[in-house]
Length: 180
Image 1: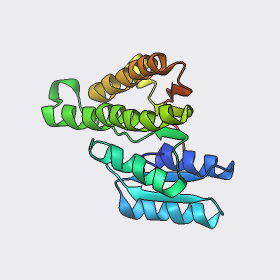
Image 2: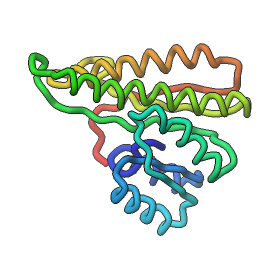
Image 3: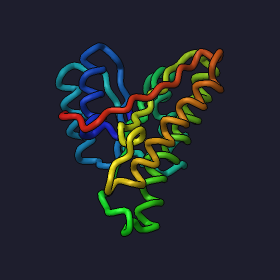
Image 4: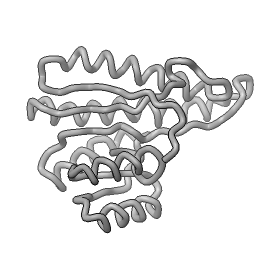
């Protein structure tokens, strides 16, 4: 699970760990990641983790390698890492646009790609992308975010169709604001 130190990622880690899954979690915030790892381990959950930046495509193969080193294989990728910077449309800067695209879309794409290589070889696996209702309906003051989440939905559909028959399933969920 990427972006697992807080919010939806942390809640997903707690829930799936309590259901018996062995987890590898990542985040860019070292302190929060350590806290989450400690909380999961204190509940007896089999968990490992590391610092990875989902917006850095060089971290995608390192992330998948770390999962394989910890557990020998990767069965599920929860592509959760993402964020939004609230800003009125007329004021959206190129820096905001690029940051949002790199984290929410480019990072998700390359993490999917790296995980899929392993899953195709295994002939099994699940990729779950976390999109947003904003990707379906749009949101004011969240234009770059809404655009990336709409793209994640299309990306999920396209990759799912391409990987059909390989044993790899690709899905996404589109939550609204979630109290975690």
